[in-house]
Amino acid sequence: MTARTYGTRPPGMPEGPLRGRLIVVEGADGSGRSTEVTLLKERLEVEGHAVIDTGLRRSDLVSGEIDRAKQGHTLGATTMALLYAVDFADQLENKILPALAAGSTVLADRYIYTLMARAVVRGASRAYAQELYAFALRPDRVLFLDARPEILLHRSIAKYGSLDYWESGMDLCLSRDLFESFFLYQERLSGEFAWMRQQYGFEVVDGNRAPEQVHEEVLRHVMPLYDGRPHAPRRPASRAASA
Figure: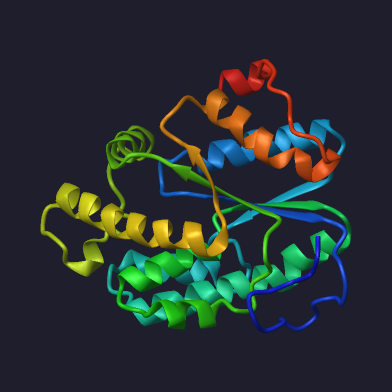
């Protein structure tokens, strides 16, 4: 991939092309991102590619601090945005760029787009959010798993037993009712993601379907990065079909 950012170059970024590939899977909680990252990683490794995965709050520097700050439900919007920016910057410098330079594929379970959308719906301007993440590397492919709010609600409750305070936008005081706040918050996020699809060229994938159907469409977008040919649909592997 060509080593290009959305603006400024971060320290330590090598000149010229990087040997690896950066693939981002975006979408709301419950859209099937994590399942798809797991399936895609397995498929690429079977094909002989070295793969590492990354995501939000995985920096050794501040991930624990973010978790602790969110527990009290008192984290301010600006502080939250800056903490997540530090988390991303640390991973970019110490994990993503070294892996790409070594020729590995990096699968990102969400990227700067979720962070920008969260910042904007909490009052930041789009210009501020873009400037905050101007040092981010441009991915080779961004796949957005688009799922209806009703599906997101059902999957989140099935997985966690309840809705998350922050993923429901309760800090925005949209409603005292958790479920109503969830739908209002998802509507605002959806509006930002719709704008980003045009701005950043997302590949939109229908996330309302079964994991094996989503995976098959994702492969058609991803595999040409490796062999230059469109991916021919085939029966999913038994492990993917049972996920």
